[in-house]
Image (cartoon, rainbow, N blue to C red):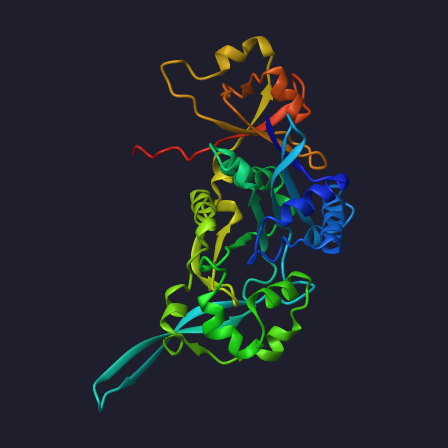
Length: 351
């Protein structure tokens, strides 16, 4: 069985092994043991509430309890850009016109921006290829929204997610080759590695502050602005299901889209509900009738330090949910405890 849980100090070795599978373009999950160790220590302190909320980095792992293997990882950073610069390009428009020549043109531009400083960030989503089946990806990604719904006071009102930008099969980034290389004079992977360990001052030192005209870029670079990496497309769809949207900000290196949302408008804030765990003898009646297709439910405990979440077929009824004993054990809960529930998929609007 699979459970998404708060990361623990003894997960470091397994986390490092998983990071070696990620590939380039995800700066928050690099196979660097020191960086991983430092980040894990911050994550443990975050769940223990021994550091301020804006410094926290909540990391979650998906564990296969049958084997003890880590199947995936994801995270929520309390806020970004408060201790080191957080850069994006904002897509803008400049208008040039001449009445005398009867010319009116709209030109897309890229502005180097710190607009998203202070936002809460969803990051580091990675599911091991062996587990990319069924609802596993949805379970891992959406666990963060249920955590935010349970503890909204820990996060800022604006939520963002930087999506990995488009790369060709050989790892080449058309956007970086068309723009970034001219200023940084180094390979994409080198720049990516520098930002992963917090060395970002070179961005302000080397990148122009004036608007960049998109039409000046090579066509293949223009074509991938706001386009995600092929393996990231499913993750983008999941985030959009939960209320996130693209509003014209992209990554400065690979031009991947930055999705954003107001926390108060997330589906999990609107539709999730608390329920008490009823007696296990009621489990059959708590599941959907045979005539109705079972609707998977995300179910989490309500404990910050030991947050755990699973996928269940049990359906809350009148503020109570009957979870099988095995599922209670996965959640570290018992009869009478309170859990938070949310349908895995958004309900269709029949209105």
